[in-house]
Length: 254
Image (cartoon, rainbow, N blue to C red; front, side, top):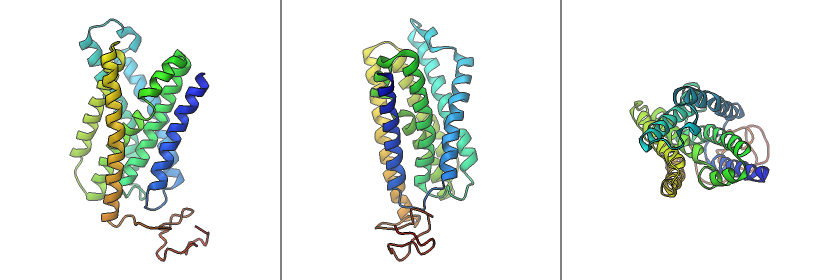
């Protein structure tokens, strides 16, 4: 049963990733950039939870604790995890020549979050059983992907528009608070708070698709992508100006 739950987690993550990459209308993202984002997702799975454990201890120790203590610990975890999911990749990718579109912020940072989320769910499902996995399947399948991608959107917007870091930091803080409140709902041992976590998950998922749609529209307005068939070669990423069925650069059929 555990493997079935994990297969669903993996399928949902891959489906979302396929949708984000395939529906983007700009240049093809380089494989090295996508794999780098995956690597930073694995890194965040080590750094964030490790520091969280050092500062706040095991979540199991909060059973029966006052709600204010659970809330403080939950918010702290939210800030740590979002910072370590977002920060390292942001420092690495910001000046890369392929990080040039609003939609790039969604795609690369979604990969980090989805990687973190899948392996976190794997550990919970194996460690606590299929019942916990099914519960998390209801509220967590793309939570981490959505939260980090939304922050990434503001980082990409900052780079494309030459803006300041302020809005990106605000996005990080807001998403971290939402993450913390989600954690609180999951740890407070109450059906009412569980519903809170579910609603916050839906908020982030809906927000992800809204921001991704906005990112694609902004890319069109800035001339960073185009509409119609065969805009870019899916093999080499070169812009197909004549919209022919063969790439003018590498010669492959589109």
